[in-house]
Length: 54
Image 1 (tube, rainbow, N blue to C red):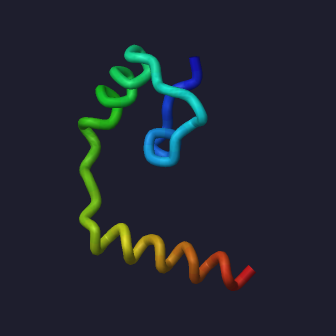
Image 2 (cartoon, helix red, strand yellow):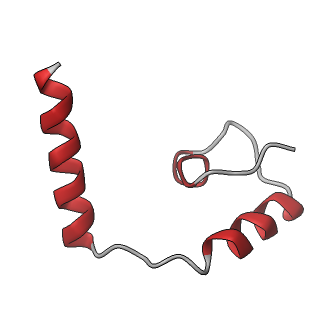
């Protein structure tokens, strides 16, 4: 079983998650510190600026 990533959880993976997959993902990620909306926006802007330079 490939562990779910945040990208999978947000964008979907083309199928429903099993209860075991979802439980494992939630347990693994609940200890992480969440980013604020402002920090996420800044991170995305920086990533987009880097991608346009290539």
